[in-house]
Length: 97
Length: 174
Image (cartoon, rainbow over all chains, first blue to last red; front, side, top):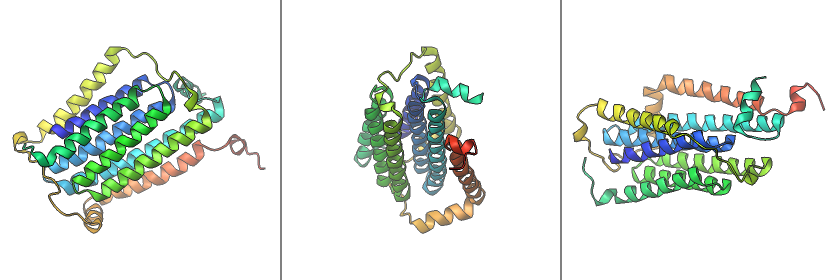
């Protein structure tokens, strides 16, 4: 269980990055840390419960989901730069208009 | 749960990963943050390798390297490397609640399973092959695999639409 603490602390750091960073890329840093925490959590739980293959399958799905989410965030960041010439998070609200 | 000297590499790697993650979150330099996130992902891959998950280790290394490369290219192109003040002030109450939520989530999953004290953290309990992993995915997670494939197609199309250039959005054929 002590290794699951690594996942929890990494997820907390990712949440703090989501709250504190101003730019979209800083926000994506937090997103990546959260997904790394989820992947490691799946692997650690699987090993601790003698279901390593199942834990790895869950971690695989989470890793691919995280990768697609981060790619989508970077695409959104490119779009923001096209429209507003910067990637600050407060500009994101204006994309609705 | 029994910890012995065989778990020492995982403990050391975990400590370094947490230090790198903290540097990534609290550093004011974009380049330092990118390299720290990359380093933490690579070391996490080494933990997976030590646990016998070669497939996940390779996936994690590719994932970290590709995203770090994308961050650096994006930062160079769009000037994020020049952002000297990337942070804003955060109220403590807005940190405490999500943190408590993360701890509660882990506790619910950990305690809610059963026989918590009988957990035994085995190192590489079986030898996995790519064939076994793929067979497990196809036979036991078929629906999730199909949903993941559809989601990847939608994400690929969506990324192309979102990141299109303005002259394409305006129908200007050059």
